[in-house]
Image: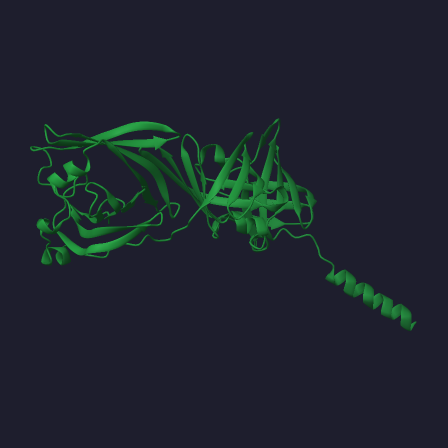
Length: 385
């Protein structure tokens, strides 16, 4: 009799503590079959205490019974009515509602954040092609994208999901073809290969910079310490003498893109030509893209053009101050003496590193516009000898 009582007691505890299927939690809606049509929304719905949430927004209510789900939503009209649950376990939920079948899989954000591939995806990645595309995948599951097209840029922001069972990335927002599922084919700390819509893409990791190193000086500071143009290292005679023969200058142009918290980069080629008889020197700017050279503009210094600009081929700035006449900049292992100048081009802060004995060549340039009514801008030119 004693053994029977103990067995009954154990059976009671096992039955009482056995897990019953529950609807509570996060569910990834991956597929909807509507008659002969299939949709793949890839949306996370959170069922919690009789309320339904999408991205923490309350979109409706539910009541869960054994094999039924009563749904009500003013925001999403199809999610209204009595749904018949055909499958429910810890990893899967399928129900029929009206003329549609909804397929869900459980989605635990905390478990996914421990996934090694998910953590490798985090950060900034760049696709190089006809149009450069840069993504930033963040821990809060937001994503930023910029597409550089010629001189223009298109930016998008949204949400992203990682699906461990499929090794797939889902972008939610206006990302063109990348809004579709991308399967990870290969990944390392510096390299990512994905397949999207039948095409393979190779991405390289870029350095993530939450904030660039801002130029901290003010207009009043510069105005109160105005420099003398006679103390600048370049003169017209020195420039004509240095460029007796035609030459080239190569720069990397870096522009800070706050949508992805990284710098985009372009290669710039400047072709220099002189005409000693006319005392004329021209700097013709070209953009190098996919091995093509695209002419972008020309700057000329002559007796009646830029004759008073001691910062040519860059813009004349006022006011300005000289902070150092002999700052050493090291590039590719070589040292260059520079005169460092800070000043303003209108509302834009400018900092020049003028190589003392190489007129027309800047070791580095930083330009920053805090924006006012427009978006802030921050760019760097770096000389490539």
